[in-house]
Image (cartoon, rainbow, N blue to C red):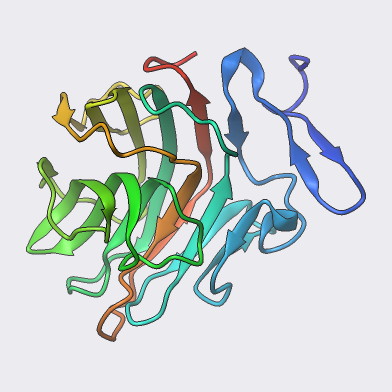
Length: 241
């Protein structure tokens, strides 16, 4: 249920948490963090380390200071029963700083495991990894009961600027294919990059957690910081609802 003059989703209070009801027009989730009153969004967006990644309730976005050597992850539980053949994830990234080192790897996507499983814990995952080391851009990512890899089948190498909004879309188009794109506006026109179809294995299943996670190996930080003001998810479709 929604009304045109309300937020894209309705926030309902159960006395403990803000419940984000299904979005209008078929979206499972439409998140802009305006209803969050704590740095873990009242228990909906859970962080393994709030000193590194958390919801900024004053600015209404996820703040992420990137480093490696500890598990810094944030997840949203979509619940069991998400499709293994068709879903669509959209999210906005705005970097305030981007260093050039191997310490700034950021994974974005959907996992079978929550925030307590670092990147080097075996899990199922589909998404991307953004990085500015070796390449300046991002790589497609898939894990089939495996750790999240540093390499990928398809790469965007055009670079990211700071103080610029980038709109990313990841779509599972079948049991054995997915794709990602990057756009300059929330029209998601794919005007910056379109991966086209990427092959994956059908045994990547049980994906339920929208996941942002860092490199849990080595040590160091190069000052990379990002903000994520919007996240949207639709289950069972390969085109926007």
